[in-house]
Image (cartoon, rainbow, N blue to C red; front, side, top):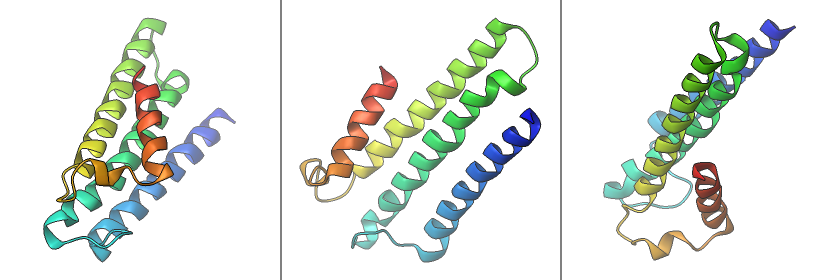
Length: 124
């Protein structure tokens, strides 16, 4: 039962990451209109958020089930993976601020504010 649950969790995270990567590389567009210079930042933002907070953070949650070894080793690996997820999240937010519209233009939606609050709480 544990193996099938771990497999299903990893498979679903992998599928989500592949979908976002495919969207980013194939369509080369964002949900909002962007100039060509801002396109790489618009594509990196959702990609880093998905990889950081779904794939890496999900793996950090599952590390207690699949990693053999002592409790301290599991906690250390969990901490490192959560730190990597936080780094991806911070870098993902940074990429959103690199557009030509500036920082203030990125805080016009509820999703922007909720994302910033979530990353802040995750870091706390």
